[in-house]
Length: 427
Image (tube, rainbow, N blue to C red; front, side, top):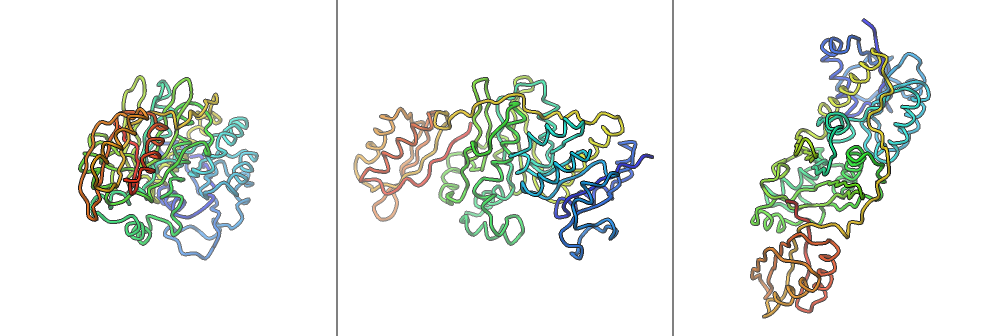
């Protein structure tokens, strides 16, 4: 049986999971490919670091060029993360005739289009399933299974850390800071958690999905992003009373005129398929013109789930090598759709305001909403201590710029103590 040699750049969480799956399932994988996958070299930073997966010492190297420049290696799996030195190493590997598999969301989101062009020009594969949603096969679904559809919308919970935090806040009524500290102690959140809790991780991932869904390049910097630091236990409670769950949702909507791509905390009705995706799980909802609505749910991170996606790409690539059919890069952007301004988008909104408990306070706020063409679906007013009242508004679908303009005016009213929260509502 023919051997196909693989070099792996990075032997952390994902790299170790990848090697473990390749070792544990070697016979089944060989039978499915008609060739044997051999892990030839693995690039690491520290040769002496203890590892859960054993490899022969000669397999390990601290020099990544031992992989990118090895003429016997046919597939390079880039599992380092970040843009550099990952991009430079991938470019070198492609120039040396290697097929590429990557789990690097930031690199794919920022420079993936150029790397895919380079791979295609060299007649080599470039696979990236593991860059979004761990073990959920969303990239293959968009790029291949739904290739005959016009995708209208994608909405996803694509960051397990924030989903874990919001789930615990919902179940226990705990504050954000307390749950974040717990997530860090369990290894679900980094010591510096900004990428997760401020939405940047999800920003990279939805940029990738939007590019695939709409066949257009997406500038990551144009993706509007809002994190979850300001979500309070009170918002969780009120949302639950109204029949909603708060989730960090990455959304992409496309039309012939352009696309809107964003990440923000959102109220989901309990009937929405993503509303019950809890803990560290991810979920992606896709709406296509032919297939209708699809929802994929699974583990979005971790050694084995993400390693599963990497191994799946390695198998796909190996089959192409055996068939002499590499270079069929299926995920190329064919045009550049404009990014439509977020301010002109339409949505329902939830707003929570604290006011002095005075006559006509509610009427004054309602008048301002009306003056800004913000139609109200429901309103709840509750008395609070210290002669204050809490007013919760849910609007009909309105323009985002009108809501924000109205809330800015409301905030300036003498009777208003604070505009605590304003969140989008998805139906």
